Structure formats: C-alpha cells, structure tokens
Image 1 (spheres, rainbow, N blue to C red):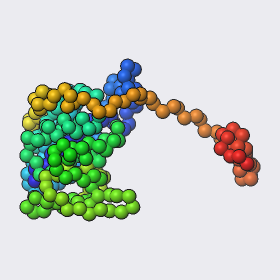
Image 2: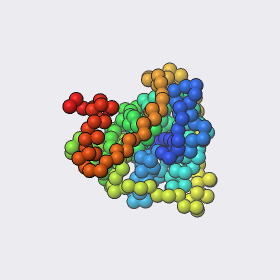
Image 3: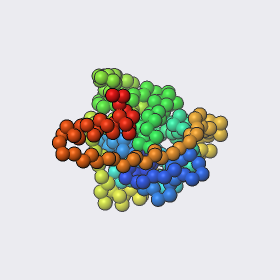
Image 4: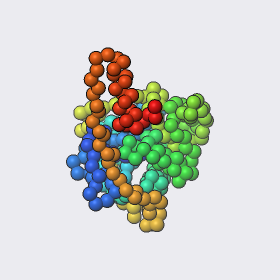
Length: 264
C-alpha cells in the first residue's frame, strides 16, 4: 500500500503569535513550528496501513527551509521518504493544492492522505481540491477506512451533519483525515533510533520550476486583505453579596444598565 501524506508546518498551539508588522500574515519571529495535528493523524494512519499491508509512506510539504525539520520529524515517525517543495509563497489553499498535485503526480501512490484541516487557517480546502487536480475521488472528514485486499478500492465512512455516510470508492483517491479514523486519536512519538535513521532517509527538494508550473498557475486566487489579533477581553467583575437574592438583583442591574443586554 503506497501512501502519500501531505503535511503542513504550522505554529505550535502554545506559541504566542503576532501579526507581521508589514504585511497581513503571522510574524514567524520566535514561533515554534510543528506538524499540523490532523496531518500527524494522517501520518499515523498511513504507517498503520503500511504495517498491515506493506508498501511505502511518502510525506510531501511546501514551505521555506525550516519545513525540512518538519519532514524529518515525519521520517522519524516511520515515513520512508519525503519531498520538500522549497518555496516560501503567500498563496491560498487552492494554489497550494495545485502545487502539491504536481509534486505527487510522479510518486507511486494508492492513496493520498491529508489532515481534514490545518490548525492555522482552518480552511479544509486542500483535500477536496487535491482530488480535483489529481483527477481522483476525494472524501472529506473520513472516520473509517477499509482498503480491499487487491488495493483497488476502499470502503470509507465520513461525518455529515447528524449522521454518517458510507461510501465505496476506487483507488487511488484522496482522503481528508478526521480524529478517530480507525480508532486513531494520538500519533506515535519518534523514538531515538528512528530519529537517527531519519537523518539518512531520502528527502528530495524541489522548486516550482522543477514541477513545470508557470507563474500564472501559482498566482493566488484569493488574498488576505487584513489580519489582526482579537481585541483584549475586558476584566470580569466580581459581585459582592450577602444573599442569593441580592446577587441576582445586582447581576440584573449590571446586565440592564451597564452591559445594555436587558430591556427590563
């Protein structure tokens, strides 16, 4: 089972982010970068399929030089090889999918996995768009996956509003992985021996020109007009009281006269 996993390097959820002073983007200064958590689950799903059915796992990512560290982490988890599209571009999800599709086209693959969404922009568009550009079926928010023994089809369950949808699709295909896919809730941690082995595993760097993409093909379809941190929350107010009735009366007064939330 040859699986390609597309991963994205994102700011750690515990990192205090800032807006770039000169453009509508996050300021990378001082940010700790990690694999997007849903992408980590996709790597884990691919590794479990490899352990069960054989084959290879290839990870693909796009970004500046620092993305190599993220790819090495994926290799230390157990992936066999990696492809780094070494471009630092401010592009939208559709353009990212177009670039990833070009990089994936020449790779052996029965299945392409992505996280259902990246935790920085939360768009969830790369998976469906990737399927479109590759010309294969795509299934979003997948929670169950059963690959046929001949590796030519798969049964997939996905979340829909208020229910679960069961599909049978031909392979190759693209799946957007949800937490809990086949019971996977946490990815494995790289062991020290695997971290050492990852240093010698193949990691191929490519540029857009290597993929044969024209400038007009990589132009973003959307642009971020403005980015700002949410305004700081006001401090809460502590109500002092002697009886519950007094507390309720003071709360009603504050909601009506100060917060202007009540009309009574």
